Amino acid sequence: MINEENKTELIEQYLHGELRDKDLNEFKERMQSDPAFRWEVALQQKIAFAVREEQRGHMKAKISKIFQEEIKEKGVTPVINIRSRRINLGIAAAFTLLLAAGTVFLLLRKDEPETQLAYLEVRLPKGVRGGLPLADSLAVQIIRGEDDYSFHYRLGDTLNLYGDFHPEELQLFYDPNQKQYFLWLKDKNYPLDESSNITPLTPD
Amino acid sequence: MSEEKLVNGLRNNDEGAYRYLMRYYPMCRKIIWQHGLDEQISKDIFQESILILFENLQKGSFQLNSKVSTYLYAVCRNLSLDESRRNGRMTAAHPDKEYANEDSYEIEMIFGEYEDLPSMKEILKEIEAMGSPCRYIIQLSYFNEAAITEIMKKMNYPTENATRQAKNRCMKRLKKIFKQKK
Image (cartoon, rainbow over all chains, first blue to last red; front, side, top):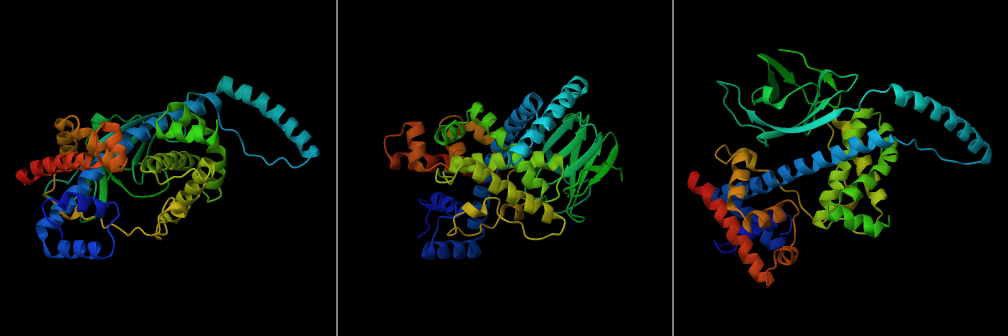
């Protein structure tokens, strides 16, 4: 029986996927028949989501920093399966060549890209009505110093911006009618499409 | 580093343990490349895999019966599969589906339906303003999904019941703030 006393705990159990059989059915029925209860479940779910996203952002920034530092310091080791002595000798020779090439590369190489994490509030464009996406702020990773990408983006769970961007200059909009994100930067509007490819930013 | 030491280090958010994981990047990258994905996406997927490992360690859903590297490679493989399917709009697989609890049910994300809910920024601001112990209890509960016994140990509560009551009081207080603003 759901009452004021056990409500918060039962909502949490539901959100953690821990309710079973009769309790789960009663909970679902209550969500359908009682709008205030459903609103409260949504509130508790959003609280959990907000805490998780914030902590996730901190952890993501930490992992990204460690990753960049380690790559910069140690590089990436290739994966090779060693099968025979002959192959071993070949690999040794190849490594000698790689070592020499690597020394030249290290002398000539540019600095590794620098990453900055920021959160942008997602807003509705002026005059547009409708609901915002699930998260009302989006984690944005700014990656500076990538040789191949100077004014590019990739939109997935987070927004990656490649180039010399500064969070204070950026605004993010979402048009629910078009189901489209837009980046507003220096008086220009850039539509953002969800894709696994890194794409140049092109104004509207 | 032994598996046990590594897992404990990761659980305790030890930077050295996270640095140690970087040795698994080449293998993950190889898996990711097999799905036709590029270098930049490899970096993102590998970092996301570590984040998933961290979250599951906090929740206790990663057990020492599988090696950290095996787990990480499985997550890398599933995330790569999702990424390469994304453009085809196919159903995304659970990132650690091989380790997921089969008894759990799908939770519908309903908070997007309501425009009168507080923003994430407002929620975080109010949690911050609550101060200790509520702020810490809520963070432990919702980010780490810590069990009552774990919160009891970390917060020095005498019994599980006292911990449960404290947690309920904090959540009720927080929800009341937003209900009043509605």
